[in-house]
Image (cartoon, rainbow, N blue to C red):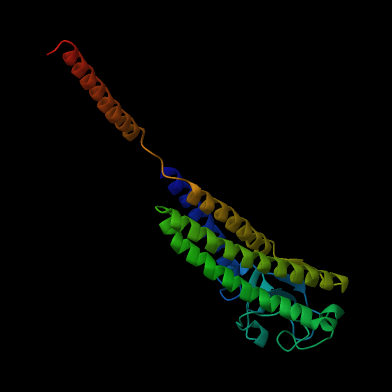
Length: 254
């Protein structure tokens, strides 16, 4: 019982940490307060692109400029908050021009558009199952069924979060390389990528611990065993003595 509760408690803490990592990156771009204004998916020098900031940062919601190392959003249409904001510099959703935009973004518009749009959906699904697993994890502290149920939900969250992190890595790493090949400095967000893959690791560890908690059986009390053996042994002893005294009485004719 104590071992199962310990496994479940540690798993809950790790699961909560993974969800916190995801919320940090999800809210970046939509909220401009510190420390969220330091998180971004991709940063690139876009000063030579008409209508773009000198330095642009992409998030799940928009693309904004940078001041003193912090994300600052203005009144441009691409700086407004839009869910599942795509990495698509040449389209009307971003800068609306092909001038000085890396050719790969223009030629393979659909690739970057769908990759960055779908990863947002997968992240929301992972968050849903992760939060649900956190709630059912309270049952895991006292029941085996709660442990297995939380393990199942965390496994589903792990599946979708892994897909989301893989799509994000594929799209934005290639996007960074496109800007660099075009002579524009660019880098991916170390916090965003670190937190997203850390969430994957947290979900994986949490799944294993929930399953270990469910497989832990209830410990039997040694005291109860001794009492049981003593009871039956006592009955056998009394029965043996009774039979012995009966034969003795019969032998001596008592």
